[in-house]
Image (cartoon, rainbow, N blue to C red; front, side, top):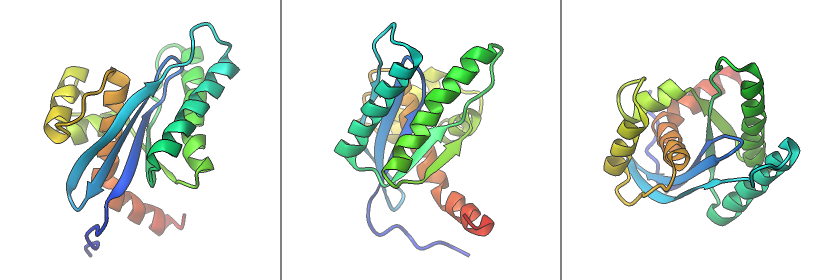
Length: 175
C-alpha cells in the first residue's frame, strides 16, 4: 500500500514548548522537498505570573498561526526530568502549544525528543550542534536565532517525514 504523492505544498508548523521561550518553525513540504518558511520564538516577559506567561505564549503562537497559516502542526512531547514542579509547568506550556492549533482547527501530532533527533540527525541522542548542522543541510535558507527555533524546525521536519504513517495510524484507530 503506497500513499499518493503530495500534489500541492503543505505548510507545517513545529512547536518546541517552554515557559521562558517557545520556539516555532514553519516549513512547506512539496513531494519530498522541504522549504523553509519562517521561524522564531515567543518569549514572555520575565517575572510574569504563570497564567500571564501562558497567555503570552498563546497570543504569540496565535499571531504566528494568523501570519503563516499552517495546515498541520507538531509539538515535541514532554520528557520527565528530576524536578517534578518544572515538568508540570512545562506541561502547562505544552498544553497551550497544543491548544492554539486546535483553536485554528488544526490537528496536532506529537513526537518524542529522541524521535526528532533520530529523524533529523540519524541518532536519537544527538546534541544541539548536530541538529543545527543538519538544519543547514536540510533547510539552507533557515537561520534560527535561538536553539528553541532550531528545535521547532526539527520538529516540523520530523512531522514532514512521518506525517503519512501518523495519518494512517490515526485512521486505523478511528480518530
